Structure formats: structure tokens, C-alpha cells
Image (cartoon, rainbow, N blue to C red; front, top):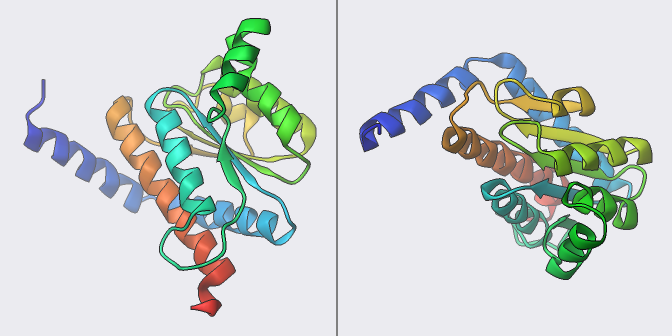
Length: 193
């Protein structure tokens, strides 16, 4: 087990690697613009993940639907798993791999944004959600680990965090998510404050 200092250094080194990768910054700007454009067109953002990534998905949805840094009106964002009755009914009646795709099909519309967090990029329920979202005309954004997994080929935009260490990947996913939320909020509401 790495020491506390070694874990902090690992995160710092990973952050520095991303900081020195100009394509990462460019990707953040492109995705920010797509989310902003979706909101300007009356659309919404939907998030999905499993385990710790589901907690991050819910956290990021709350940053958009509640507020991040600015006092402003709420904007529509939700995590697919927050209705536990829906999730358990679909898992029971169909299959766990369909819980998010069914949510997308029922609550999504063309032009919405789907942001999926999966450190492996291979989580079956997230893969199925991306397939449905693409069929319905969503903008799809994946946050994964270094391989990208199957989500890399199913997403319009894929943030491949260059690591295989799950906690470090999740920490970078949260950082990316916070930057996206800040960019979106500033673009939509910055002139009001």
C-alpha cells in the first residue's frame, strides 16, 4: 500500500501530465461548448456511472441543477440512477445492463448531452446507455481510464485519463467535471453577476 505522501504525489504527477497535454485542455473547451450549446437550445445534461462514479455523476448533476459558483437559476441536469424504484424495476424486469439505456430512452431527447463516467470504459449499463443516446442523437461524452474501453468508440468526446489506478482516475474525473460545470455556468450566467 502506497503511503499517503505517495498517493498525493501520484495525483499531482497525473495532474501535471494532463496539464502538459494540450489536447486535454482543447477537449475540455470543445465539450464545454457542446454543453453550453445544448442548454442554449433548451436541452439537458444526463449523467451516469456505477459505484463511486455514480456518486460523482450525481454530484456533477447537482452542480449544474443547483448551482456551482454563481447565484443563478437552475438548469436541467440529472443522474440516471437517482430514482431507485425505476432502477430496480428495470434491473428486475429486464436486466441491469439496461437500467441507463431505458432511462435515456424514456427521459432523453435529440440534442441532450450524456456524460458517462467509467474508469474501465467497459461497464455494460453505460455502454448500452451510450448506444441508445447515439441512436437518439445525443452528444456523448465519456470519462474513462487510459484505454477508453468500449466507450471510446461510442462517444463523441472521450477523456482518457492516463492511468489504471481507479481512485486517481475518479479524482481527475471530478476535476474535469468541475471545470466543465464552471465553464458552462460562466458562459450561461456570468454576465448576470
